[in-house]
Length: 295
Image (cartoon, one colour):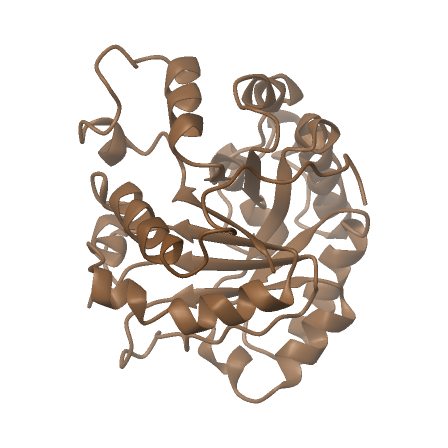
């Protein structure tokens, strides 16, 4: 039965900082992360998607969190095929052609930046979130496979945003062959960009679920419009059978809330933790098991 860890997608989102969730006096990065780590054992670091951090930054993340805390880290935008502004690249790489050589260099610097997390045992997984423009097919599979090959010694999770990836069983087989975790998602249903709540297990080590909210603006509008949603307990309870199935089939289960409007993600995480505590009291809310620095 999996060790279930629950957290939010980020701890420095502006809306969270102004919501009052952090106690008075927690104004600096160190005190905020230390406080967050007293409330949840898992967080998603999304800032590397927008720009590569330094190894010093991630070393500080490790120092400010307890043993067993997990960081799931989003891949840089260029690595997943998202439109990438030159300013998101290191200055010395901004004039380079957008080719395989540049992808490899960005990967090498990304991996170097995350080494302190891996060395300390705090890296949960890399999160490669692919854009809706990446439709399934041979070229797309080759692109994902090349990324996995670069990251062959790292934990690797994949979230697809094109709904067609989850039509049939091919994607489950594909990710299992890559030894990659399939990321399950919760999104609103009935919209052109809706994603099914598929939750296959593709590696026994880890499963990941990301709750994006149920805004009718999913797939359109601003970031705030797409992710604005306050989950209710009944909405979260719909996921309990899937969560239990994932927990029964993996060593560790990460559940992350991305409904980033004020403190809605933190409140939803706390609600789900309460719901699960009545069903799986021995798996939810306990400290994570120690993890080796590499695998």
